[in-house]
Length: 152
Length: 122
Image 1: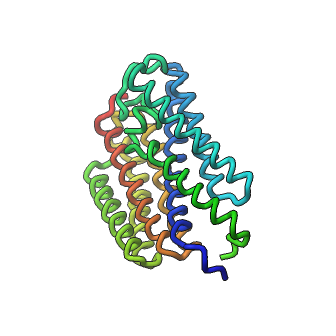
Image 2: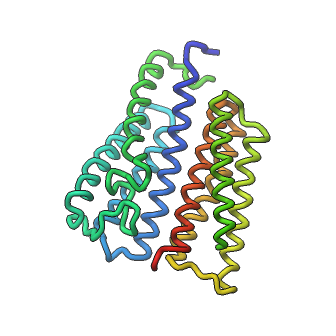
Image 3: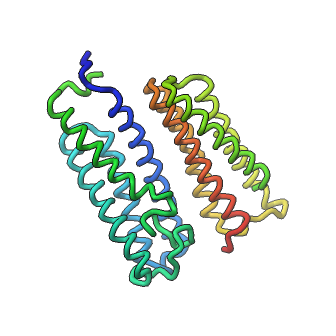
């Protein structure tokens, strides 16, 4: 039994994983629906929607799976998401036509998980990567000093 | 879809979510009450699935996209058993919080389903 490891961040991490999983499900469901029903309408936006869904799934897996490689993949995917929500969020508000969108309504039919910085998803897509990075950073110090971390 | 039934479901999901969140914050492990609350949300979702499949035969047709409606409904049906399953494997307070988050996510999805069925123009 190793007692130096505070159970709390690990627990919060679990919550993070669940929210990621729900967001992955939401993004996958929505993009699948958009691509099946009206891909021609805004191919670029809907492709990005699908890409974000894949990245969310990958991030969820990377947060769960142990090991250095997955830890690195978690950093990459979460950084990508933050970049995505900032860049696509900005474009979706300032120049929606660049994405082939005729509407900037974050709750509308053309909305993606990143539209208007994820406003249609209660800004969770904007906040989550930051929390994810904080958690990854904290976990690094724990994982680095105690090799037996997984022995709970 | 029956509108009043969906509103009832939404109230139950929000109530169950708040209850589980509170219990989690109080440090309770997942118990019969919190897992039971998630189970009630799930049973109502399955009832809604049956209702939604049958309703069009009685002239109650979705105004919006049926495909989108079912994407939400099926996703919602998956969420709370997943959280309940998790809470059985991992016995700590965070699993109780997770049950609450799952119920609230279902509530948001129910709200969207209502928009699609009642207001959305296909």
